[in-house]
Amino acid sequence: MITANMPTKPSRRSHRPGQSLIAPLRILAATTAFILVALQAWAAPEMTTLGTKELLAIFTELTTSNSVLPAGDIEIANFTANPESITLPPGIQEFQVVSQTQPKQLGRKTIVVNIIIAGVAKEQVMLSGKIELYGNVVCSTKTLSRRTIIEAGDVERVRRNITMLGPDLADDAEQVLGQELKTTLQPGAVLYRRFLKSPETVKRGDIVSIQAASGTLAISVPGRVQSAGAKGDLIKVKNLMSRREIYARVIGADTVQVDL
Image 1 (cartoon, rainbow, N blue to C red):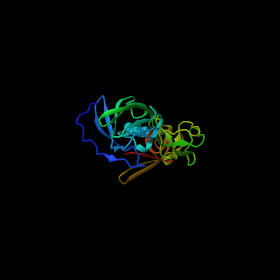
Image 2 (image 1 turned 30 degrees about the vertical axis):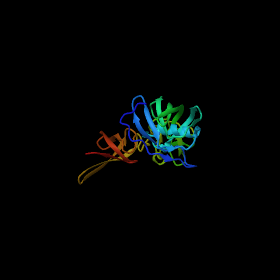
Image 3 (image 1 turned 180 degrees about the vertical axis):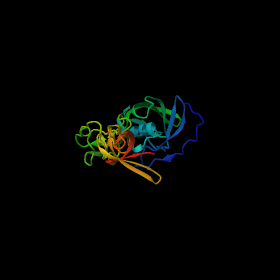
Image 4 (image 1 turned 90 degrees about the horizontal axis):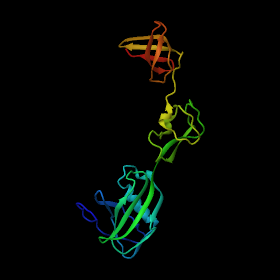
């Protein structure tokens, strides 16, 4: 066992009937080869057995204790242990990770753990599981065609496994209402922000009021939209008084504004 600047060993705590055998883990030391983690453990008065439930708790704590992800959003799937259970003699139990795969936070991960009692490695166990991330996402409730303006009832917020979904997920149903779809969605499809755009406020050929203001001076002339745009977009407009084409910002369905 390699240790460096080993901190003081955690105080012993007696195990009471009904008390969980799995207490929070505390990192004692780490090197490139070994990671030593110990339970704030109990002095087991007799032989104890670690079964699947206890080994899963140990695996979860060892693999997620330093994660920046919210603990409530992480779940372990397809957990296995070899051997499936271990019977140990009395003593304070410590757990030393001697090897591990998949250094990334999410995905399949396997670790080999030495179980140490009174400074002596008593057993070794291989623990493996798939670390998954869950979160709230917006999904379609029915088939939504391209160019649909999303309304209440078209989408819902649900909790999903988002491990493999990547970034840019829409997670607030209220924020997508009134947005226009750029692609067709099937029922239950996850909605990404890149699938959305602001709906066109003005279309090519629309007659609008071109407004310009500077100090106390305000001007308004009629114009014809030359390119469609959403509210806030800078579009090309033809001034029907001067016959010149200018760029103006869309303010509303019948108004554009020129910055002087």
